[in-house]
Length: 195
Image (cartoon, rainbow, N blue to C red; front, side, top):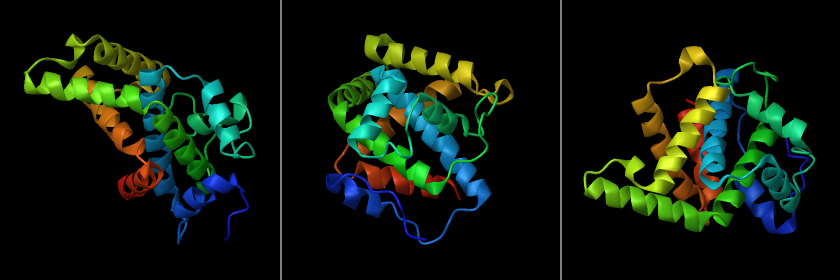
């Protein structure tokens, strides 16, 4: 079924790159929703962006029909099966595509900060030092852990070391998603991890 969404002309090819030949099954879509929410959580806790910044990105991409306001954004985020008190049980593929473009748009905008954080992580790893020793990474890890514990189901909370590992993996992923073909990389990663 062809898409009815009309992204801005400069983003139409990026939208087309995220087309699917077949619809994901419900389990795959649940995995996509969970992974996409985690990527957004990492981006939000590193850059301190607000829901307003996400809505502004949707407007700039001409995707406001899919992500119109804070309530719509909240419902999309709440569709993750990892979330506490899921407010909405479904997210369709068009909405997932819109969030992928929003993540890429915002990651590109904050690419310098993402690069600096990843460079610090590499430097500390080479020196066998803990990531928390750098203020930027320590703040990110604390913010990510606090937000994760606050928003996600308590019966599936990972141990602190696992949560830090997840946050650092997502940080590295954000670097790839901020690249020129980052929207495609994120989409492919979501599809691969949903199987």
